[in-house]
Amino acid sequence: MPPSLNFAPVKKSSRPIIPRKTIYRLSIYTRCLARLRENGIGTVSSEALAKAAGVKPTQLRKDLAYFGTFGTRGLGYDVLELSQKISDELGTSRLQPVILVGVGHLGLALVSYRGFEKEGFEIIAAFDTDPGRKRDKKISQPIFGIEAMPKFIAEHNVKMAILSVPAAVAQEVANKLVECGVMGILNFAPIVLAVPEDVMVNNVNLAIELENLSYFIQG
Amino acid sequence: MPPSLNFAPVKKSSRPIIPRKTIYRLSIYTRCLARLRENGIGTVSSEALAKAAGVKPTQLRKDLAYFGTFGTRGLGYDVLELSQKISDELGTSRLQPVILVGVGHLGLALVSYRGFEKEGFEIIAAFDTDPGRKRDKKISQPIFGIEAMPKFIAEHNVKMAILSVPAAVAQEVANKLVECGVMGILNFAPIVLAVPEDVMVNNVNLAIELENLSYFIQG
DNA sequence: GATTTCTTGTGAATTTTTTCACAAACACTT
DNA sequence: AAGTGTTTGTGAAAAAATTCACAAGAAATC
Image (cartoon, rainbow over all chains, first blue to last red; front, side, top):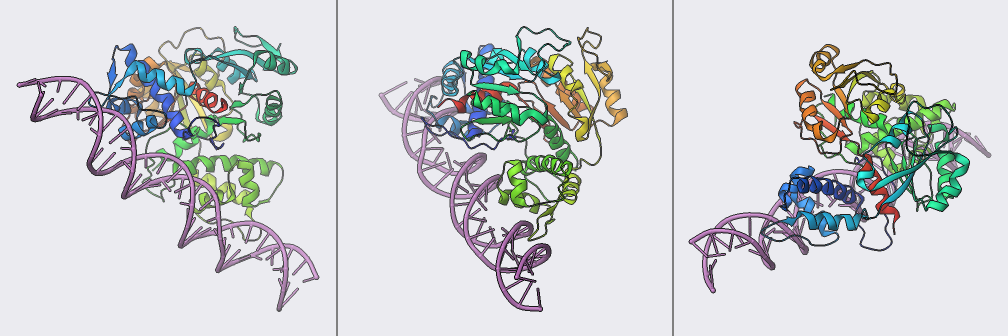
């Protein structure tokens, strides 16, 4: 995460096991490929794509080799085809419903963040202990009370949640999410969540990111 | 880093070279230690602290060994002393001024996010191409136009910036920041920034984090 | 104060990740 | 159709990160 802050073991029942770091990079590659496509570029070499993604060409090729061989020697990769193949592998072809729990400052911004839907995710609802609280922004999604979560999750087959509640209640809410069948949590609360090992947690800790920066910029 | 999305090489002129992942974990350890302190716990074993941080005890000990030996065999670590030593190493003892560029949905939330100051960072000002635009939230920091950046950065000795502008202009703004002497950028724009190698970029890409989750939760 | 118990610190082994190096495959040119 | 130039795919090597295993050191107990 960065090599970031994620420690959960990488597991995948079917299909070959692909390292987590590779999966991260595949996501980056798709975004670079999308930009190439927008610019009307039909073919790209591993060298050019790697440069755009900020990695070495060999690494790109190794990453792709985990799940297939898509290139043409002497020519490179077909931009459209490679995009498609990576999307298939990542499973981003289908749209994933996501809920958000904790509609405070950050949660509110995330709910109204337009960067998700373009990428195949949709925050279909938000939950908060105080759903009716006055908020300084109008959002299109409904805000429900926490008690409405189990029913909603079951009915909409929600598998992923964004957790933006205060640290003090994060574990408790995470437990509830897991109970309801949520399998993936994007956690913004600055604590390490304890979850069953088949549940995946990705942590985003902004303070740690800043701290990390500050360390490396002071000689 | 999510082990996340960071590829810049780890470099540090003075002091021993400590791997980036270790630095990330040191940040986690300090947060766990802070909680222990709040609970009045004076001593902790590597086993207990590692469990709280979600890592293996040996890893914790190896991480600490990079910059010293602080424990007492048979007893463990003094919570207060270890906190102090890690803070010293990370350089979080002193407060770092940070600016934010791009006061859109996300930027606005980040500016009003109270999670930073507690951790030693303060967003002292925000910049936007349209500083006067109507925003649905009042913030305590001033918002200036981009043209005011160079002078402000120089005057306040700003070394770090949070970049939350649209992808299309992110590179351009990053160039300007680098020109002004910013050495660390926390980048929320979903593109790979090209910067001189002595400038450090940490990427936070929420869509990729979600994508990553979704991959690992589908069998 | 001797003995037992606990826990750190660390060299060595292991595992994972990245990089190298080059043969194989294809495109392009003539 | 042969020859030249690219670029992929991959086994092997190197580097990095993690885990093991255990000696050394300190506390607690008797």
